[in-house]
Amino acid sequence: MSTKYELKNLATGKSTQLDSMSGTIGPDVINISHLTRDMNVFTFDPGFMATASTESKVTYIDGDAGVLLYRGYPVEQLAERSSFLEVANLLINGSLPTKAGLCAFHDSIMRHTMVNEQLLRFFQGFHHDAHPMAMVSAVVASMAAFYHDTTDINNPRHREIFAHRIIAKLPTIAAAAYKHTLGQPFIYPRNDLRYCSTAHGGANEAVLDMLDSIGSVAQIDKFLSKVKDKSDGVRLMGFGHRVYKNFDPRAKIIRGMCYRVLEKLGRTDDPLFDLALKLEEIALKDEYFVSRKLYPNVDFYSGIIYSALGIPRSMFTVMFAIARTAGWVAHWQEMVSDPNMKIGRPRQLYTGPTQRDYQPIEKR
Ligand SMILES: CC(C)(COP(=O)(O)OP(=O)(O)OC[C@H]1O[C@@H](n2cnc3c(N)ncnc32)[C@H](O)[C@@H]1OP(=O)(O)O)[C@@H](O)C(=O)NCCC(=O)NCCS
Figure (cartoon, rainbow, N blue to C red):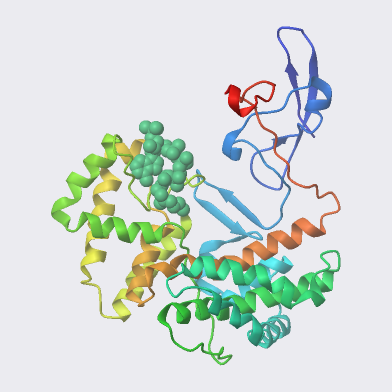
């Protein structure tokens, strides 16, 4: 049963009742959609710290408990037992595919890996040192112009083809961006190769820059004092998360992966990895980080994996985007097919000048 809440203006005595809504798990939400109509106020919640902007069935996160579920399945189980394409299929369709379903999905993705030859010409317009992520964003945006046979977002089949196209083509576009930065010819996709599970990568470029700037284990204490002092605005990159206030479950998985990759490459004595592990060990015991619930996030480890694999730092965000595409597409599909979807228009607390008259330039 929905719990009722009451919001009262203590100055005027005017009040309104608000209903709560329950999900399948997680805290209830209070429906405030009539608040402006009833009380003539907006809510103020920078960064959506206490606001759910939509209903969703794709992902569940409990940042305090370190829980992450994709369509109900714990991320640990999927990372251990599933493949990238199976998870992509799960995210988009809502349930784990049958053998035949996965086979058909796999075939469809493989059929779409090639990109239109004209699309590749876009890269010629970029200077060789353009950031790969900027190139990839621009080329992805141009896909609507190349594949306009599937741009009717109200047509489920169009949406499906678009979803398959973008998942399939992103690795090809990412590889083209990389080759362009090297000034080498593009390489066409090889459909006999499997997807590997690409790792997260928002701040991992910054994590490696930070490790470089620390330089050696002997400098860790000095660096951490600077972080804690705060006056320089230096943060321990790869630590802390807006939602996960416990050990990020993905960080646990990728930490293990980091060991496995370095072991396989025979690089467990990598000085950068050594420095990262020492930094992690010290920070995890440090009162400053413990009291603020700051734990290593995925980026702390993914940069080390990528650099061990020989992937340049400027490509990290692109690698991240390849993996994220499946989730973005799943959320987009869900949003567009929801009959109650509304355009997102958060309001603001205006603190600028009140109305004033234009002054001619000679009077200013
Ligand atoms: C991710 C991040 C933006 C989350 O920030 P947030 O939820 O808004 O947390 P806050 O900025 O409110 O930080 C809470 C406290 O921890 C401190 N803090 C947070 N992350 C910190 C970090 N990485 N290093 C040092 N101090 C940090 C803040 O200074 C603040 O301290 P205070 O309570 O004394 O003011 C933040 O942790 C961060 O900048 N991390 C480093 C960058 C990074 O790794 N990003 C990748 C995220 S996947």
